[in-house]
Length: 400
Ligand code: NI
Image (cartoon, rainbow, N blue to C red; front, side, top):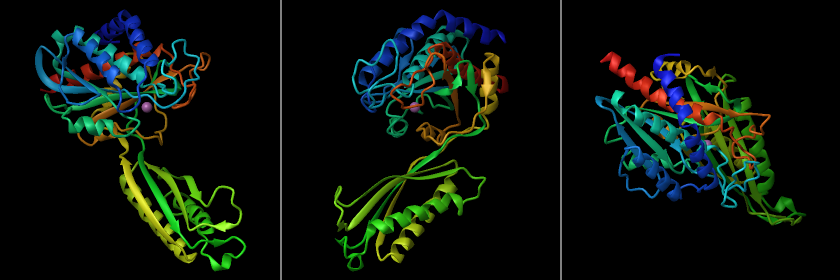
């Protein structure tokens, strides 16, 4: 362990109970996407108490704080998301949500507590920092629009942010392990709606109707061939139809006019997403035609994939190695992350922080009502954030 990593570890141990207090407070006071107002005030209060300047963004929720080092250098961003989910908490956390039906079921409370820990640790080291660190607390990740909103409100300017590191809790990795991956981490998210119009009629006289239900069944079956027959087996792809609606509930003898269905597409490659859009349109429209119906397809590109920057990979690896944490390289996730909006603008790197502990009941998946992180991960996350920032700034200072 190098001297700097040793000091980070020591500082994280010194602030461990403070970081835990942030986590306890944030976990028991969750706020939904776009409504993280009290959470924002809480964070602002902490940052300013350590002499970190707030950047005025003119947003209801979301906070950016800038720590200026004593020497010139680039600006590195550290990002945590802030929102909770509309889930009724059923975890055995000793300090559960005080807002019934709202729960930090994705670990964003942990991300914020870790980033607050890193902010305090780095504020103490300001004399040694060449450049600046921007602490980005981002609202509305679950709605996939918080990072884009922050970018619109200028979070990447004043000072201009040169790189961003982010992390996410990961219940499948035990505490003490960190996923440091090259390339894709999280998938692109595309969503689609297919509306099939036929001609309604009597269930006993189907030959007089154009049955959109039979047509919809054929469309769903046809869509399965996108993954199994139209895409290279080496390319990861998911196409799921997740809802279907047609006819009056429990009416056995009326053929409806129309069936609608909605689904999602996940991939790690935008070009593949565009191909899938074409396949869905072609299969839905031509199948509908064959059944005497008409299909209308709406296709939306909601999120880009989150791809880790090749340039930041060695820096991230070095940062985590210096802390003597165990490095993992799990498969990328077909979940989505709106961190990807940042990756479009500046080099970015995203970690998964092990928060799992099977014995302690901390292994439920993201968004489960029983989701829980092992708080032992808190000081480790703070160190990963702080070490990434310092590693980036030091690297830059060396090459200047
Ligand atoms: Ni999340």
